[in-house]
Length: 129
Image (cartoon, rainbow, N blue to C red; front, side, top):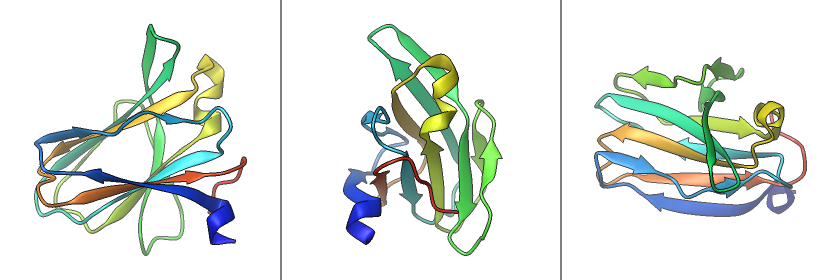
């Protein structure tokens, strides 16, 4: 079951003041979910969607703490956090549909030194609640 839900896991190395993930395709995937480790320093999280070579757009996303039950939608301008426990960021495919975007990146602006960010690609068109 786990391998069918999160069929691909990518580790993204931190270590810079600003980390942008590689592009993840949502053309056939249901979502991409990022696990971001705890931080004692402020972080700013933003996401972009892409179409072709020339189109990029800031997009909204969902976030929640690991112990939280419900997702919170964050507008396209992103979210600024002070110190945080580990948390999840999810970008479901339907957040891209209106503008026909098919790829996404996540940018974490702040101290990511020594931290890894994990991206879980969700197969099919399902996002856990």
